[in-house]
Amino acid sequence: MEITSDQIAMLSDVWRRLGLDPDVQLVETDSVATFGAITITKATDGTIISTRTGTDTPGDVNLIIRDIWQRLGLDPDNPMTASANAINTGWIEQTISPTDSGVIVTRSHVPYFATPSYVDPGFLEYQE
Image (cartoon, rainbow, N blue to C red):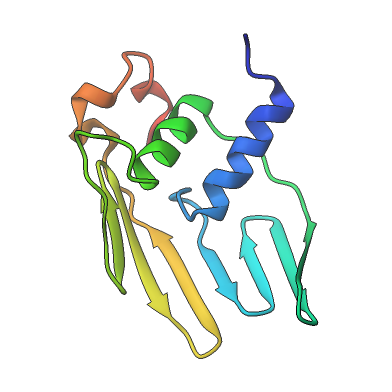
C-alpha cells in the first residue's frame, strides 16, 4: 500500500497542528489556531465547531510519521517529557509560551543527525 498525496497532505496538517514543523509556529487561542497558511476558527455555543481555511505544502512523509510517533510518546527508545513550558522526545524540542490569549508552540531546530539511528541515508540531503 502506498500513501497518496492527499494522505501526505493530511499527515502534514496533523504534524503542523501538533507544532512539529520547525519552520512554523503553532499559535493557539480559545477562538483560533494558526500554523503556516492554515487557520482553524473555533466557535462555541456549548459545542466546539472548528472551521479550517488555507492550505500548506506537504512535508516529508518519513519525517512527519517519525515526528508524530515520537511526539505522541510511542517511541520506546525516546520517552516523551512534558511540562508547562516544554515538550521533549527524541530530536523534538518544543517550547510552550503562554500569551494573554493562549499559547505559542515553537519547535527548535534540533539537528536531525543528532540521533543517527533514526536517520535514513538519503534523509540528510533534505535538511538545512
